[in-house]
Length: 473
Image (cartoon, rainbow, N blue to C red; front, top):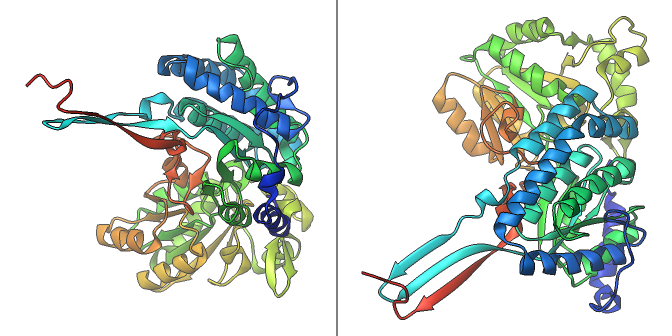
């Protein structure tokens, strides 16, 4: 799915070996682009660097607001087309759900409104602190939410006064190029600078190396797997990293079980479970287990029997070096295709497969990004918490719980330490899809920025006017 750990390590070694000294000169004049899409990453970086200087020197914050609104309008008018292109190129997820994801990032990604100014006026003068741009940002995007991430990052990053050079996942390069061209055209047609957002047409590992070593790129942002994020953190660049998740759900014996089933079904089946924040495994107290399983089936889930579960496990996971890894060929595929593969017909429209397992089953412990939801019965709440923490594996990404017991919810929230913690609702609500708050596709748990917005991609700068300046009291 994402850039491999070994490949990333090679990049880091090259960077740390001193590749900076061989980087392009700041005076390099970039070639012309096709609406922000370049043949060479050096040209994409050079053009973005020029555009960013123009963006901060000749455009007001109100211009940013106006151009971002034009981006929203353009993306909104092409949301269905983009969703279809992603679905066709990646072969993952569900077309109708991708439309929802696009609309969420279009409508609920904050722009310049979150760049507030703090001021202190006193006898010693006037102090203001504002959010200023980093400059040029290098952004690595995933195949699971490719164009959604480009739209989300573009709005957030240019709102902060930055330019962006994208390095997209090779498995989504066509839809990403199409999306970037649309947004680029919207920027230019509304008076913005050309090449404020750029990318290399053919994404390569060499391009990532050049991005991490080029002095004109001041910040790296990685959305995807943990090997990529960890490698960027070791590259020497300031990095914002959005890594993997394996979100657990706890259903305790006080929960509204019918609500739990409805919300879990919605989240776990959404876009075939390829969102990192989606419910990946459920730990339910024995008292509520039968009712939960029955209600999930009523919602439309297909309950796998032990034999069917084992047959699917054989091809959905690959054993490697004594552990299990996801078979990437099956990531994001429709639930009905899994059933067809084991000879179960007549369930083409099924959106979610559920199964009962023990707490150490591969489908519990490995983030599988498939519409398969393991359910583990446990006797006590303490066992549920312990198992959920083990399955989440310290990613600190997302967790959820269904309960009427505030003390239980508080205890679990403190122990799990996730960036997103939803109570009595689908984890989709944690990113504003059906819930309050803004939307982002870059959830920076590993580096601590959390649910990113324009403010996340800025530097805090202080300006001081001394000697009581401007005070009138």
